[in-house]
Length: 170
Image 1 (cartoon, rainbow, N blue to C red):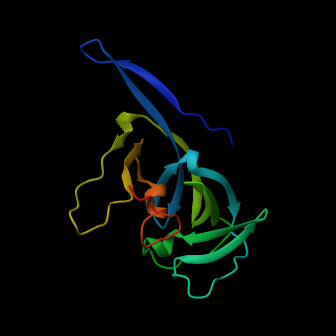
Image 2: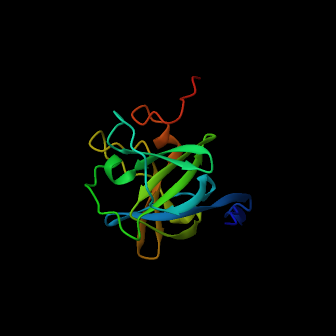
Image 3: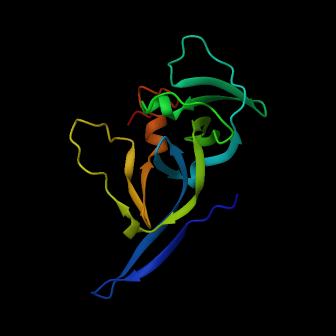
């Protein structure tokens, strides 16, 4: 998979040059919603395969797989986001991520495509107060009529409730 980030230079009304980074996202489905994660964090995409369960693991940790000699924890994003249980089928995939030097996988309903979003297509997360935890949401992306929830996968996987990545102490 070839990954590329492009920077386009746009001149604003005062004539100064503004750098805008066009970000590439891998889009995937969980239930009826479409999400996006930065493509640079994605190592590979695999079909859903046998997973070895780990005793006393949180319910969203499905277990581990042996990926070419590396033991990789697998997170079911449907359970993590409280979207209910799902029947695993031929569309169910595991996205293998490399986040903060740690390899892990996440189970999603289906992978859609890779899209490039310019700054004008990205919106900040709406202020929802303390009702909904939006800490892991980078923002919302719009492509034609599609609305994407852009996930900061590094923040999500390093959150204290996930415990998959050591948190750096500043």
